[in-house]
Length: 348
Image (cartoon, rainbow, N blue to C red; front, side):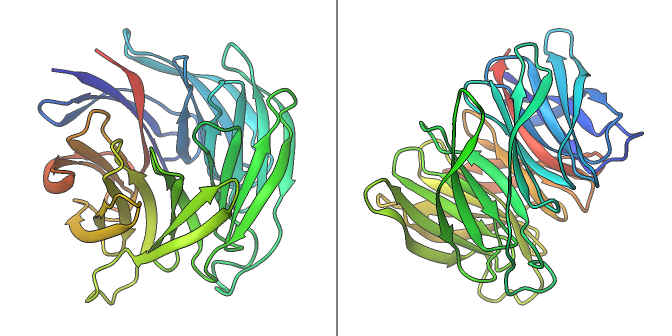
């Protein structure tokens, strides 16, 4: 039996335990809450430090804050360590670079990308850089301004991809590891009105998969230095017969590069695709997320399970995978408006 540890973020209020520490039994497929911490409004997205027992969350609120936490898996404890202004409204995504030296964030309503020094003890230091996005998209309700929604490091590079839902643009920034300054490497105009939200990289091929929140699509791009970015496929994340409202949310690729998963809010499903040898998607299958509004999910390290954060039904659900596909719901745990699921590397 292996026990993994999980951190979850949520849209809880300041008075509620919005960040929780869990154990996950990989044999039984069961989650068990072991600790929680309050004191931050809407502590939504989380990032785990690559080598220390610490994490950072963004307070997805007006004048949002960034908060770092220390946790101890042996004593089953998590506590706040430091706090900083997030330099804008509604921090939607945070990530720590692979060196553990820099914390990067995007503010959805503030429309900017920020870099903060991360000190050796885990404290959030001074802001090293900030880049303001400008622009709009054809969807007047959702694309009235720039709305960067995620910032994700390109594997093996000091390059970060920022998906801007408001401008239908995917930006690639190069991070100076000494100064923390960002330099725009290139930008790609996505399909108008698609609303790029999150993306995931293939573990072996020079490809990435961009999720369009507003049109519920997945676009496959090649990413090569010589030829730049090229679109090679675009597919729907919904069944052909579905006619209801939907917004897509999260995307993940299996460690072996054979399957892609995405979550649908409205259809309330996890869609899984097979990935062929060239990286293209085929054979979609749809499985209920076990709740309403699956805003985020994570694949369990080692395979076999998927844990979904169902914001609208206040539940975490565990789905069993068989041959790469979700086949059944094995557990539902009630917890206030979960919106992020992150695994901690160490096992016991």
